[in-house]
Image 1 (tube, rainbow, N blue to C red):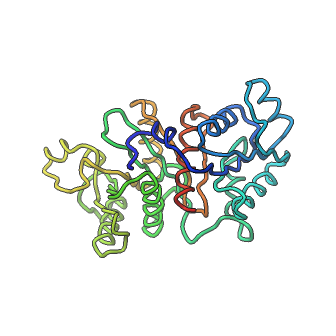
Image 2: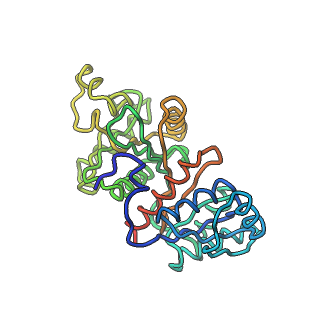
Length: 303
């Protein structure tokens, strides 16, 4: 089944809970989301953080955490280490950032001795449901990698494709975004996009991935714009993954979808041995809940 909206993520019947290690769990919004995820059968939270504060928050908000394992650890570095090691040892299936700096959690994830490193690259994948687009959009990478190289972009595409597959996509159409459709040596985004398309044509990607580029955003998402401009491609107007050339474009597109278009969203970090739910303090309750559900279904696919 291919998911066409994020609400469906909350409705699917799961055979088992995916265990979620929540690092620095003593946060109101995070506790709200993980408790609801448990009620919906999405995840079984393991709470790692300040036990006293966590219990106090749960009482104030009338949240039932009585069935959850709580590991009392006030030191944030140690809490991150505990969460990462639980995932590494198979005691948890994925991990979530609570009231802790992203840098602390990622430092633990990338620890050479007991972390969750792989041969891939950590990259952020945002999934957006936009009212005037006919399917979900996978935007990458507007959250982690500043100016990725060609080699980085190959890994970023593969990470996003892994999420798309977990969401039921059989054919994954990738638009390598730039400001124009022709390769121009003065515009790095177009050069990289052209090279990525060549790699695709040479069979360097999985068979379910289709890559087009360079492409402007309007051509990637509007078949009408492609028709008017005479741009022919099976990706045009039907893109699944929007690969951005740098973090500025990704950040701008993502926030435009949220604040201008009223889009719904979910986001995770891929490229480690398990998905990382890395939500922003500004994300609303539903975005956090959708992100947990996205992490859960991606973790299930990896297991």
